[in-house]
Length: 183
Length: 159
Image 1 (cartoon, each protein chain N blue to C red):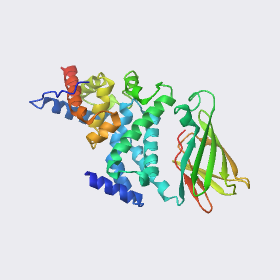
Image 2: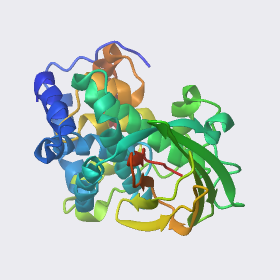
Image 3: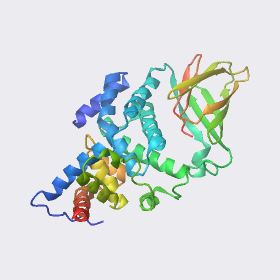
Image 4: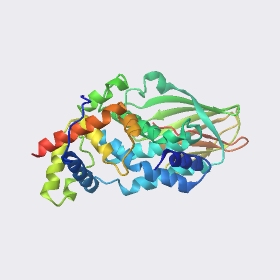
């Protein structure tokens, strides 16, 4: 989906077009899901974040300064809501967002939501097990990049607070680690 | 973290990535109800009222925290929304599973007030001094709709 078409969807949704809203949801729902999972949230916590992200978006539609950047806005909002849930549930004590991702690496339950029982083949289970042994940063990045449809690099940057120029090389390093774990 | 590219002349890493994409889609799909929740959020647009924006939030003064956090003592949070010379002041008494709201309209007026959350709502009326109270609300994202002229709706409140 091009930036122009995303911007057009935002404009139409502002005017009350529910189909445009549904198209925005279809475009970004997988990304929100991946961000929640990357922060170790599952079950009701993740569902609450999803709900709040879309409530916030509908409230801010008319105030978005750059409609073409709505994906980045959704990504950053999802990240902030995940951090809010982690803080309020006492799973993370932070003094500011700068410390967030270091603290996230210490979190347990990064696999929240994954059900290996859904996998039939041993090879797939082994891949999932290897993925769960990656560091938190790699898991968050790869989950985002595997979302359907995959987010843009700008959206990934907003979700992870990572420079766009680092995304490609970091992906390569994380996938290489995964390959080595499987060897 | 290094930003040096990892060489992948044979496309081996891309193949691993493709497998991971397939396995994650199988083992951790987006829950079915998420799409419905996201779609339902759009109902807020259809509420015909001026949007009162948040002008004060006591939580913002506490570094984003409400009191001592969940699962402990009930905590208080004060919010103020304003639009078109109408101000809605709210005091949220946040319990573990539910909350109650003490509210005041300024200038004072008697009005029907509907509190909405994603899958429900409840109505009350303010008295002639503009005050109202709602007990046993679910601990969910909430917004208020104030009937009258002007009709007003607040932004979403997340507790």
